Length: 473
Image (cartoon, rainbow, N blue to C red):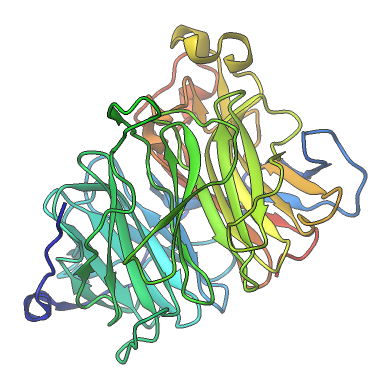
């Protein structure tokens, strides 16, 4: 289909400046002392425990706000930004922490004391680390509200029409160096990609820091596939979060027709190459896949395989032409997971996060599992890391950030239920000091902890990190 370019003058007319009042959000007493999963386990690919050096320790913090689909951005000075929103559709609160997650304050765009973003169906925050600019973009039915700040949330500039077209879902905002453009207002090219209503994936881009947007003319992925038999079939699936390499190459992952696929563009989205990164199948209409790239151009890709619903990591050191053998990188104790997400640090160093269970029924009943089979299933938020992915026998460290006695969710957590109030995705980022931070939602509080059924009205934003262990930067 053809996308129309929005005239630059229109976007300039709707550009609105707003001052954000930093209102402290009182985190619960003893926030820094929340019970965590403790010391990480060292393990090899495949889940077997391994002997290694000093393992990191998990730390858990309450963000002080309800959350769903939590994303995190980290500035060069290690300031954290967390996109927190609730199911009441009251808009997104951009929470900021300057002490590693121990305390948080609300630095959201506001006007007359109220959130400037009037509603959100998908909250999102992203920090362009080299420039320090913080972006918040909220999905609405009509379009998307986007705000950006150059002073860490003290003041914001808002563009209420930052999208390619109305009625889109599962957005991702990211950016990096140009490949073919010559930006003058802002040094990086921004990309906004989304799932179309018909389940395809499309993108728009901005070369002026988000003031104006150009809708790219060709979808990255279509919502259907002709297949080997020649007949059309709906492909489903979601695009994951995109990244840009140091040479301006754009990478956008997607579970596509039951396969882990990567879209690669070397001309800022004008054309796309599709690469299948592994022969292991993914779940059709299943969970996100995730991609990361380091400063040397090495590509890393994390996905959940439908064969056992466990996380697999592959990498490419030649621009996506060939890929490593898949490595199962899950914690030795888990038997099922969902919502994989990935970040890369120095060459060979990665951090990843997912929601995992030690008593899930999938190994027993597979795709035939019912809601009743998941009645007693508990889920935790896991963060993992490795500094030597390219080694012959890489070592991984993994830990639940929450105390498993206090799970973050109970019940079914898959592509159909989207893990209750956690919804479509979580996030992980590596801080400039090498510390990995994961963002989760505690959707199991009070009576839910020991109940046999999930309690769906709880959705507390939490952040976990791994302290110690090998440096990732």
